[in-house]
Structures are given as structure tokens and as C-alpha cells.
Image (cartoon, rainbow, N blue to C red; front, side, top):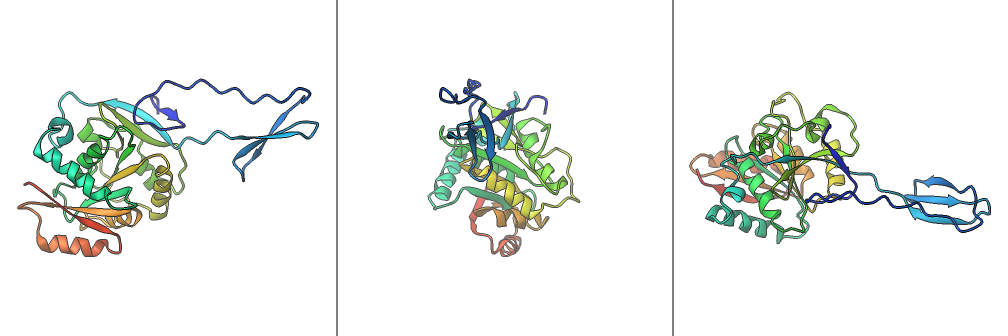
Length: 278
């Protein structure tokens, strides 16, 4: 990525580049010191001819490659937390945040619906923005809807590289993973390209492994998953998350579809349903 910046410690706000730390200097009389990697202990072993040694931590590998984009001039109407932060709808998303995370060990939440058009992307995005209102909280909003990717369009950008697209295309994947920081917010977004890839499928093992590494960077991960009755990817995402929220559109969703979707998601933990206005 031409504009990507590799960060060893991820923060939701840009920080100045740290000064490079000087290498430890051996004690007097230790000439010709060499460094031997110690992979098991994740340490560097300094060895001198006199067989005196010193153990120093090795630099951690970066997990995320961070790109930056600005919010568009005209905000998408679905971005309630940005457009109407003092509205009743915004307060509802803050209440949802409170209820979700008052439960123990809920850090990765998948948001899905029975059918397309039931408001899951709106819910996932505003929930992530509500969580990120805490300045000390690191939040990732991840697009895992290969059939109907929406997050890039909602925030007004096309990703130069896509995390989930890479998971689909490669049989193995290593960090740093591409993520976009949205200026004017404290949310990081892992968006999909705007062009759908309906023939692709999420690979559960690789997706789970990548999420495990991202847990070390972010306090919370909100996943905009595919609709349950449209793609089996929703089941994969649900199995890898700590819990699933199912959105229901007032006057639009059918009760039978919602019940069928919840049954299909099991044994994933379904945290509840969220009713959105028509």
C-alpha cells in the first residue's frame, strides 16, 4: 500500500514516530559482540567472547498496517453517531453498547440479520462508533459480507488492500494486516472492495486465526457479517465471534425468517435481537 504506515503499537490517534532505541552496548572489554535470535523465548541473546551474556526483548512484529482516509464532505445518512450524536437514535446505540459489554468476555461481536436490508450494517457501524466514544478504547469495524460489501462506500473510500479479501484469496496469511483509520473518528475499518465476490467463501480456520491476532491489538471488534439466510459465511463469523446480534427491521422482517436465522446460527451465542425503525 503506497500510503500505508506500519505501526508496532496501534493507537486510534496518529502519533509521532518514536525515536529509534539504541542497541544495548556491551560492558567494557566485550569486543565483537554478536546477536543470536532466540525464537522460543522471543529474546535476543547477546554473546561475548568472554561468554558473558545479556538478554534483551526482541522487537514485536507489527500486526496492523494502518492507512488513513478522511470522512467525505457529505456523511452517509446511516452514520447516526456522527450526523446526530445527540439524537434519540444515537442514545439507543449507546444503550446497546452498555447492555452488550456489561456481559463478561464479550469483545468480538458479529452483527447479522435474517435477510438483506434489515439494517445490520447500520447497526454494526453505529455500535462501533458508540464504543469508540471512549478515548481509551481501540475498536475495529470489519466487513465480512462478501456478497454485499458496504463499509467502504459508507465511509467514502475504496480500500487499497482488503483484509477479508486476502483471507478469501490466500490459503495462508501473515501480519501486518491492512486496516484503515477514519480521520475524525476513533474507529479503524477493515473494508472490502466495492465489487461483490459472491462465489467466494470465508475459510473458518484462517479467519479465526486472524481474529485471534487482532484481539491483541483491539479492545473490541465489530463484524458486519453476511445475512444468515443468504450466505453460510454468517455461520462462520458467528462461530468465531464471542456473540452475535441479529437485527430486525420494523415492518419488514418476517418472524419466521428471524426464528430460522437464529436456529441456523446455533451453537454460536446469540446475544439478542435489535429492532430498527423502518
